[in-house]
Image 1 (cartoon, rainbow, N blue to C red):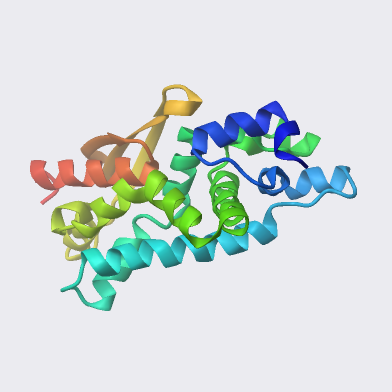
Image 2 (image 1 turned 30 degrees about the horizontal axis):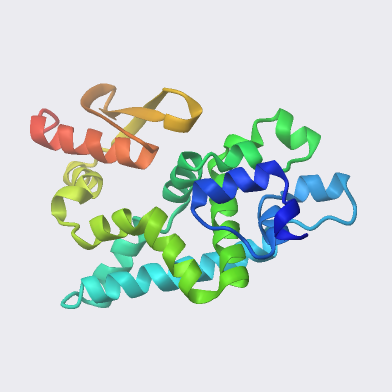
Length: 232
């Protein structure tokens, strides 16, 4: 596919991600789910690019954290990376880029709302990174990681105990053989979803919080519970 005859949808995605492909067919593949391939023989799904993109993201996120956290041991860096390289975060980034609106799905997958599933959006985000790597090389892929995940990676490198409120709440409750569960409510449009969470202990709401992902909302609710300290 020549660069001057790329479909309008691909041009929109290129504008959103901030990268123009030399070979737009790579981007088309990155946006093609296996359910579409099953109904359209001769097309290719994003699965191979997703595999590559997962490795690309892991490498560049780890390298950035390695440099930013030069005094930290391996375990701390691994924990920081996990707050960024995960399904919820990548799905959040994919939503901010409106990738779900451009994914090619089979009829059944589309009817079931597949384009808004965290797992699918995470896969597509990784596939796009893989496609950029194949098309433009390591520097182009690194630029994409920095552009769309750089702030989150930098934030992860500055993690302290306060950001791990959920773990601290769980540990505090475990001392008295109690557990916390979280109840969620989703609000806002698809491109700017907000999750509201309640931390519940023994049927009582002990904390509340909100965030752009369920994980962030649960952390906020846990921090609120620790601050209230009513569960003791």
